[in-house]
Image (cartoon, rainbow, N blue to C red; front, side):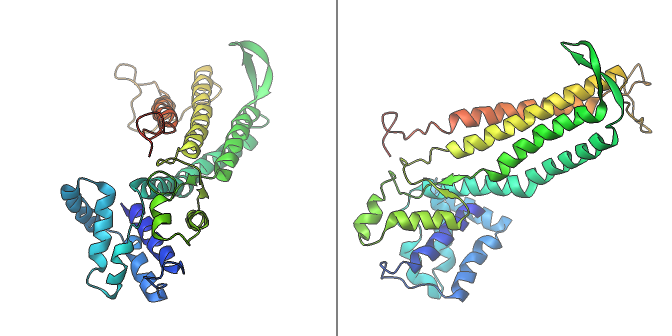
Length: 308
């Protein structure tokens, strides 16, 4: 809801700057600040208010639109009311909102944790670079290696995926009900809507996708999900290897007071964190795999269920 409100507000601000939309004027810095405050200071009470509206509309995006209208209807900004959500389809709001949420989660939470893992493993790789161990190939004893070198392999693989994740651009569309800017052009034929949309999407930190149906195809989201699948697969491999290193006595676990490894064999220290991690990574990949295959097949694709 917060990101939907953000897109609605920023679109209104951008629309007001368009000189060929003569019915409204460019917003003052004070009014821009006021409008942006609605999403910057978004609260649980605001979310509840939107849900209350949705109980009537039965439409989530329309509820956000009405929420914003209600915010400004008794203010000097009331002249801008007709231009909230002007000529847009819900997907114009949703696709940008979802990509912005995903991008925020990746960069502000996920990548920070992943970089911390890479950093810690790098420290271990250097610390144990001279600690010898017998390598296995096909599960059979092979030639010597070192613990540090084996951990460095994991770090190298992770860092390659981290680089791709950082450099990946999420796309967005803003072309109206069927991706043709039909309503836009009829209302304001003198506005270059392709340039307007491209500039607007870039202002949000996304890459414009200007050739779409009603639905943004989500290929860039799928690419991001598949990037995470590869990261999770590398980490799954690391969990299994670590489990085996513990089993072989190459690595040892420290006993913590009060912890019991088994109800009948309390002397054991089971590698439960690596086992749990492997399970969680598997569940995550199941979801990410499903989404990466489902989302790029929009229900509104021409020749499928409808065209726009």
